Length: 165
Image (cartoon, rainbow, N blue to C red; front, side, top):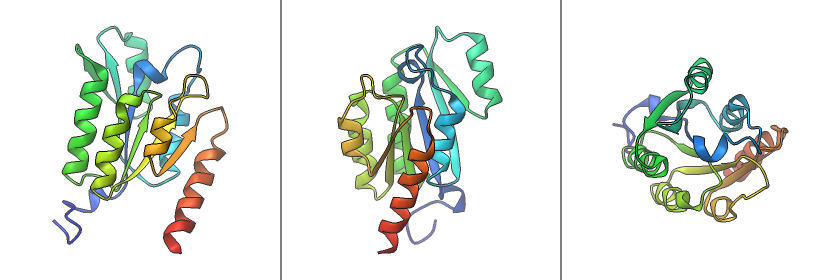
């Protein structure tokens, strides 16, 4: 463990947690590669997890795994599993930035918890429609996917400028 309380160098980076049922909806037309790119814009990825329920199709699971996502299938509430895992990562110091892709206000406490551990946070919304203002307000940075990944890069540039001041 180093002086920051982090376990090792592998914890320096972004942990990306994707709320599959909330993000991968037909009306958003979200590409998992865009979600990944948004998170990578703020740092190297230490984990990329896509949370799905037991009704996920084999094709979706295979496509996510082909894009480098660890797929977590739960028979219970996807939100609860994702929130517990993200909070555990924060408590264990397994990341320097937590990125949550969702539009669900249920994740506001997770972002606040990560912030209380000194972890930067990024809220990634799948689109403007139905997006919760609570997530971007609780996070240090936010990105709304609209087919233009430049938003994530601008957010990363702004964060770099703020930390250098």
